[in-house]
Length: 176
Image (cartoon, rainbow, N blue to C red):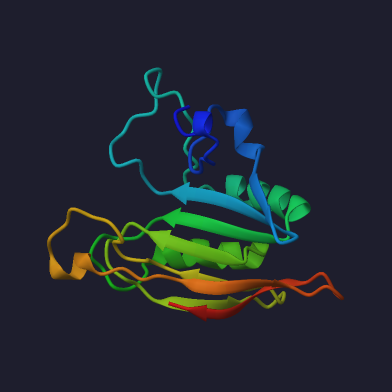
């Protein structure tokens, strides 16, 4: 309520289950960009009558439905993922499993967080032709952690290009 009252877009939390299908889409320079979020955990916060909000956990059925809605209404899909094991430098099997699913479904960009250290970036290309840029973990941009490995963060820059002749939208010049 605080952020929405100040016209700030909120991601990762919905007021109720029905609203999880109201995908946040922002149009910039003629490109409609959909934003989705998923988490493996709420770090011990219980969602109940005191916290009645819906937080989208990793769930294949929900992901498939939200991506389908996003594809029908947007040109480009960005997914933010709260995933992975803390203080590990490589993606675990669950991160790879969901990255593979998102690539299959046509997500364009996956931005990972939670490990608190930098993890790899890779292009995934599905046999169906979908191409997804996956950054497994950006590290810690702002944190109270004091370990040297937790003081590093990656910044991603890229261009989202729309071909005016074909209407194809794609990533160009990614740098991490």
